Length: 91
Image 1 (spheres, helix red, strand yellow):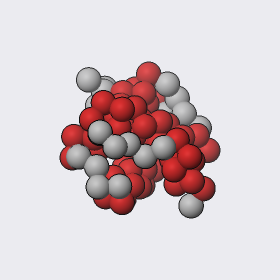
Image 2 (cartoon, helix red, strand yellow; image 1 turned 135 degrees about the vertical axis):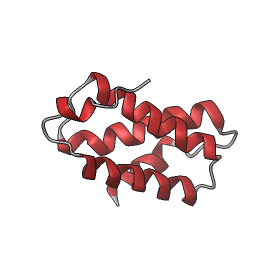
Image 3 (tube, one colour; image 1 turned 30 degrees about the vertical axis):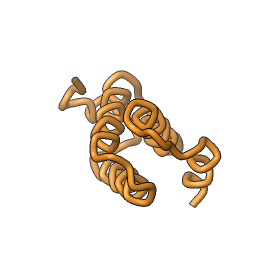
């Protein structure tokens, strides 16, 4: 499980930044009509990664989209393509 105090080891990310990323993940989740489990797995993967690694502000969305991509592979039958994920990060 993610360490509940992992934000103390992050130098550029705050709880507010995490909130923005989780909200963005929720919007993507709703846009593609994904299963609820997909969102929870993605957030869990995101938090677990941040527990182990310090991430710069410019890379935090990348970590979020990769967490969602991994979660989609576990739960979804019809998953968005990698090109769709790339397009989402540009908006």
